[in-house]
Amino acid sequence: MTILVTGSAGFIGANFVLDWLGGTDESVVSLDKLTYAGNRQNLASLDGDSRHHFVHGDIADQALVSALLAQHQPRAVLNFAAESHVDRSILGPEEFIQTNIVGTFRLLESVKAYWQQLPAERAGTFRFLHVSTDEVYGSLGAADAAFTEQHQYEPNSPYSASKAASDHLVRAYHHTYGLPVLTTNCSNNYGPYHFPEKLIPLVIHNALAGKELPIYGDGQQVRDWLYVTDHCSAIRRVLADGKLGETYNVGGWNEKANLDVVKTLCAILDQEQPRADGRSYAEQIAFVKDRPGHDRRYAIDAGKLERELGWKPAETFETGIRKTVRWYLDHQAWVAHITSGAYREWMSKQYQ
Image (cartoon, rainbow, N blue to C red; front, side, top):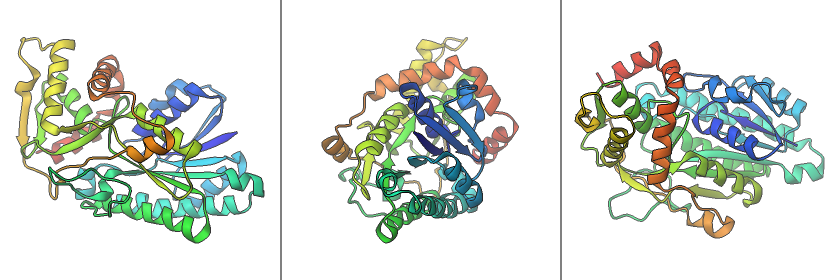
């Protein structure tokens, strides 16, 4: 038995592959384009493991995807491949359109053709699981109820609009062609292997480097935080027992304002790796101009996933954030490798 995982060298995809092979002998075929956020080193521990086959390629390459499906005959395809950083989508949305919309469309076309030629028994158990985001639902007010699966789509950034479009394509391929699909919409992930352009790894990296810790606007934007291995366990549950055509929201039940997250990180770093001058990392906090169209609050109601599939997160924010800080402190070589020239240029441009 084999599964095909796209976007497998990215943050969530890599954690999923590592987690999957840590708990089962079922083989994984990994496909990743290896853009700036796709890091082959994330999967280095699997080098030489016969259960893992890595392929450098694009989900939009239908010939390649079709050949991989024909060769490896997976029982499931899990699509993690995506451009995912809102800031980058504001400065350059075209890559998001190409990967998240065109890429998902071409992947669906390849998967549909593969599924349609499977013997009836295998076709009946095949699954296509599409990993998406809570940002497709738009922004919430302070007193609004959390997003459920019935919340209407109101994407506000080029990134979230492109992910919303991909969700709609997946839904359409189920209702039009009968493709056996499942969709998950997750809240903000954090944990090991997170590329340091996102808030938590960026703050850890800048704090240790003695740089400013940039916070947009007043820092009161609220997000629900989900430890990445909890997300991986939720995807396994949905893959195993999710109802075809359904969407499942995945959240950590941890709403936090960005400023509070940064202050928590500073307090942990003060304990784990104090500054040489004995002062708090919180002194490095710097408020910067808010980004255009910045959503004020996201919150996920993951009750459906708990009621129907018995899943709930194992980590609290307090336990998960300490594990995350410790991982970055123990993996400074990984951070140094990926924060070279192109990354520094991006940071300078974004926060100038």
